[in-house]
Image 1 (cartoon, rainbow, N blue to C red):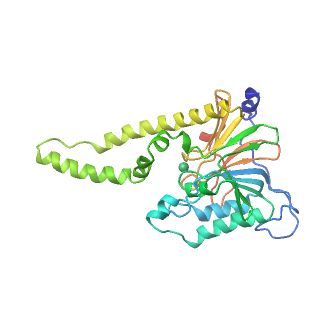
Image 2 (image 1 turned 120 degrees about the vertical axis):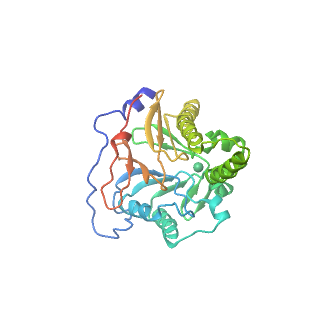
Image 3 (image 1 turned 180 degrees about the vertical axis):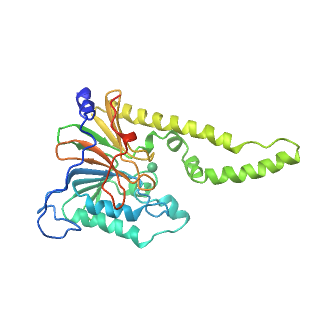
Length: 294
Ligand SMILES: [Mn+2]
C-alpha cells in the first residue's frame, strides 16, 4: 500500500501541466460549482499570514482566480494573530482574501480550515462552521485513487513550540535581538580588550541547524502519519514546499504565501502537484523541486 502511493508520484510525467478546462459563460471570477467543473479536485494552501506586511495577498488573489477546486484546504497560519496582537496591519487586499474564501465556500466549494499556531485563536472554534467554512483541528483527505492523506498544520511537531511556547514568540524577534545583543556584546568585549566575536560565523552555524530542523520536522510528521495508519500527510508550518516519500510514506508540504507563493493541488485523476505561483506567468515547478522517490 505504502509503496503504491509513493510510486505513484515518482513518474516521469511530472510536473504535469494541463490546459484549463473549457467553460461556458457566467461569472469568470468565481465559477459556480454546480454549473462548471472546477479545474482541480483539491487545493491545499497554508501559511498565508494575513495581518503581516510579508503576506503576499495580491498574488494569492490572482492564484485563486485562476485555480478553483471541489475542495479547498486552508492548513493553518491563515491569519497571523501573533503579529496582529503586536501591531494592527490589515490592508484591503487582506479583506479581499477573506471575502474570496467565503465566496468560494458559498459557491459550493468544500472549504476546510485547519488552524495553525499563529491562528491558534481559531482553535477555540473547532467543529463549528463559519459561512460555509468548516473549522477542524485536523482532517483526512481521500484522493481520487483512494489514498488517505492526513491534514494537519504541523506545529505539534515543532519541538520548540510544543514544549516552550514563550520561546516561539521570542523566535519571531530573534534575529533583531541577536544583532542588538551583538552590538552591545562587542562594545563590552572591546572595552575588556577582547577581539570581535563573529556574528556571521554564529549565523552560519544557525543555518546548518535550520537544514537539520527541516528534515527532522519532515521525518517526525511522516512517522506520525504512519503510526496513525494513513497513506500520507499534507502539512505546512515550515514554509518549505515539498512532495516526497519518507520511508514509503508520502510527505507533502504546501509551502507558504510569504515567500514561495506555493500551493499543493490534486488533479481529477488523483495526481498531486506543487504549484509555485508567478504572477502574470503560467504556474511552474522549479526543477529543484521535482518529485523524487527516496
Ligand atoms: Mn505555523
